[in-house]
Image (cartoon, rainbow, N blue to C red; front, side, top):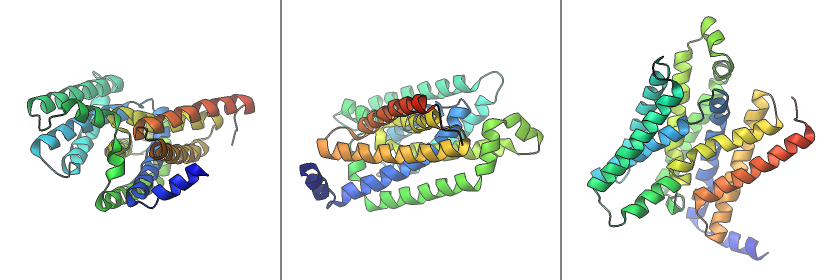
Length: 283
């Protein structure tokens, strides 16, 4: 009862409500395409793009932009497109391209922050950007509305192109042979992932974004077998874990991003046990 009273007290503050809304939207968006990325064996594109976003945030900080989204979002989208193109190159495979862009962007971002430091607490700023912080609890109404609009676009795009995404995920060669423009749909997937990464930076930080994308999908795959069932289960699990993680973080003062990932890990362990006991639910 004491925890419930404390929670109800915190919900009287707008920033807590904003954090929960943004957390639910970001977790929903990330889980939808997480299944596709895991099945395409391209899970670490989230990690690579998150490091690109870190580098872009370093540039925005040096330039002095109050709204770093103006730099971070375009640069991340462009790198997502370049990553897709480079990954299709026979000389540079997908995993090598992700590693190359990931390490390069992270190093350049840290170098820029050191050379053109605008803060007396550089280590704190870097740690905050990489692992998430209380920035999710300091969102403005404008940032919340921007997140809502971008999330609606992501969800609408996923459902509108659901059949094509399904085909490209399971058999890209066959889809191309039947006349499907796989390059376009791969490009759409890359751009959507870039938008999700930028949105998730405030929630879990750049180093933990991959967990937000991958864990719900892997958990759902432990219990379900069909693409549709896994996608729905992944979305439900992701929203639940993010909501619980934010609430626990608010109540006990733990880091938001790390708490959400910890809840995702517990959910993965539980789903693995359930999957083994039930033998998998086939639908």
